[in-house]
Length: 466
Image (cartoon, rainbow, N blue to C red; front, side, top):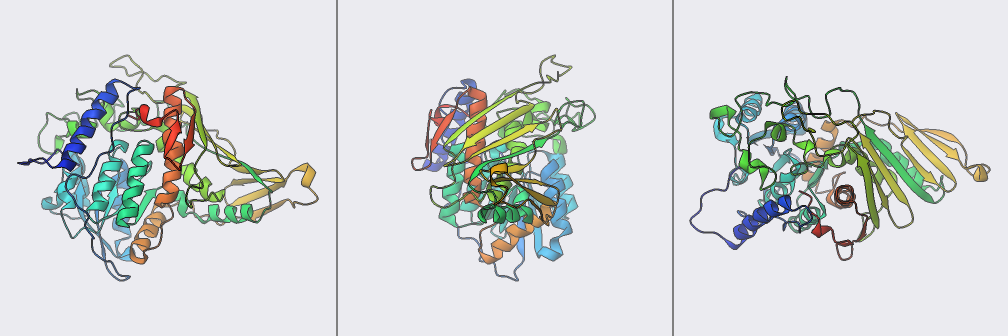
């Protein structure tokens, strides 16, 4: 990430990107205004990147080395470096302390620490990029990375909104880079076993899938546990006015959205605010959406597998108050659900951070239902078909969704050229549900989507995701 580099001239591509940022500021000020155009690459023409053989070492760089980027990627990839034949060669972040922590962890000299991700991408030794920034930066960094010839592992959600999802999709297809979304459930064998049950016709015609991801194990509000004081910066000196390791590039982080005035809560706990994150819809729901698409056997071929209609509801039930401002400390709901209708079946996903009792994970058919939890699935016949469908318990042999397995799947596909488990075709369909679901909740709408035209009624482009 980072501020725009100084240039003597402005290319047409840079003009388009700067215009997008300006448009984003307008959209943030006027919620129902047209969403900004998706940012275009400003620096990179299509670069081929290095051809990586089965025995070649993969050089990995990181953009965003906060809680997820450092804890789940820098450290885990370091532990598996020998096994995966990888080397971590660069880190990038807008916060100096994070840069130092990550760079020191993997033994990099300060010349390999970056605050501007585009400068980092100029390094031709980098083969692949892990993106774990705030959601508002996923799309431009993914696009720039692939156009610079790098493979991409992008944390979920893939981006903000449907328009950005299609922009990433088009660049993946154009560059043929290996793109993986960080929804590690797609690398758990259990969902593929459930898909076999569905395809075998053991529940008849599929009717509906449902899943949930709930949390409720805290008293101070979700995402408020970073630092001693949940509303202050973890380090009191940190901010845009500080120097050295305490400096934070707040203006670049904003990407033209939200208040210009420094706000530590918005920077360190950005998931609570629409300008930078997606709340539960983008943070927790993808953990269930990607896998249930697989379990239900939803096609990702051509125009198949897209939702025909998406709606959403929810509330901010427990209004945690910031003791400094005396105002609610978040914009996103703490209970929400999204429903999606497809061609012949439906799906409902629910999530909450104030009650940890979720819905039972299941796929309903007209002849039976698959209940799945833990390491087994139960097939329960409908009474009318009890003589045709046998009740049984099927072992699933799940792996618990470990992140290193998902990372390895991405790295193996970089070497083999195969499609990764959370590939762009699956991710595009999931992000369509996420993006339209977020807008449905925020703007009290139900969206009818047509993948052939990439359009919806009402037009999702008229509702800003920022």
